[in-house]
Image 1 (cartoon, rainbow, N blue to C red):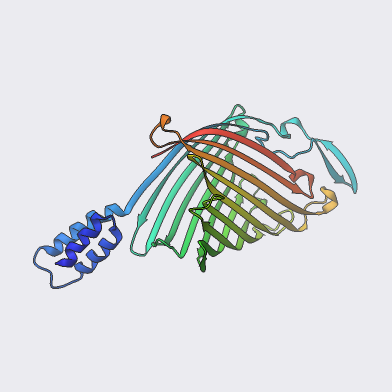
Image 2: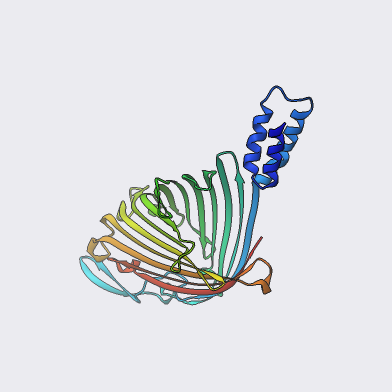
Length: 351
């Protein structure tokens, strides 16, 4: 029939989903010639293999971090003991220690397009290894992303799980559920309300664990002809972190977060930059030994920039990378005032 031939034409043009849709409609007809039903079923199985795509990559990097152990800024801490301030010297092993490190990354993604639904499953592993084993870090991530199968997708949902090992010890694990829906598209910019919840578990100190929920608005803009940037993103969200144990210092926390990101073509490569500001405050006093029981108020600023440049002399899919990361956390309690900067260069290979 003409529909049978038209489905074949769509498939050969790369429109696999449309071809499968017509093929499925044909399989439901009861007036097919003898043998055609079986041919349609075989063709459907063969075509569905083309809806699945695998991608992956590995990377190697060398860098330097001036605060490998994320230590507090000061060399002395002031405690409140028996109502009096007492200044104590911080042991050298708990002060900021800088040094060089080797970074290793690996990841794989499986994407499948279906009728009305696109699914993406990915896993990644990142390791940072230095001359001091107690500062080594390994992080594993797993994501499942479901979205409307469309060039202009309106909705998406995501489930993620993360685990962090530091110094060969399990430190932190989390699981995240997130959903967004596009409500408007104005001048190449999409606006998406988002809602998310994350369970946070601290292995060494379970009392710090909690459930953090967020409600916010994202803006994602594409400017293909712009000299400023080709893509700009911004997200603002309100945060609420509920303690899962009654003995958590400071009890519940609340605040807000701002996230800005840009992507720009620079020469033959891509420049990526991101700035994040987070404000959080405790519901009650943190501890009587810190600032005489004051509430902990914190703000964290982080800035990340990376440049990616094709590097064919390392392989057809190779990219040279250069990255800079800086973070600074202010707090009403000295113990939580930190600052660190790291820089690295490396090569990534896509698979």
